[in-house]
Length: 234
Image (cartoon, rainbow, N blue to C red):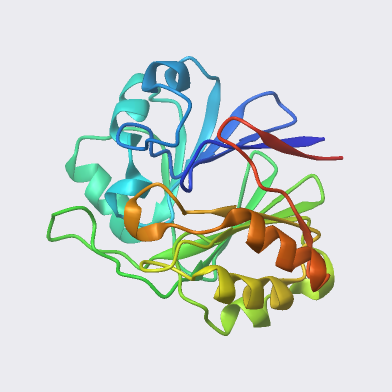
């Protein structure tokens, strides 16, 4: 069993069979939708931290988390790993190129290029922004990060074997809800959770209408989560 928590914006936590947490894009401070404090996150038993790209609302509170947890394995695009090294981060790190497959603690992780800006914060560093495919105990999860609607979402549909997909619906920086519906029709995930919306005024979206359209078109079972709620994959 896997339990996947939504902590607002694009911050996802997967509770692993080991009872440790895998974090994706841990944006806490400045994320008005996050129900957790940094201190509460630091109290968790975290094994792995995945970053999809270098914007502040995805790198988030990574530096503070890993400073307190030097044992956490960081998995990120190469440019982010290089930047973290300049920040004095000593954690074990794996830099994934797009298309790479890595296995870490029985977790298979693959990065796929996203259509998005690759700048890392306000620095001279950049990276290839990605979305991530995570396979754990036979369950396959997509976290699409920040991306426009791109053909790769169709070509890696995996014949309906995707258990859960987190799709951005906010528009402006990412797909909007209409494009996310198209992505859902391509991906054919069993469950779709909308992310990256309503955190800021310019990414407002109607999550319930998105869910209604998913059901009407039979693209997926929608799960609209409030921060702190979860999806369980049996």
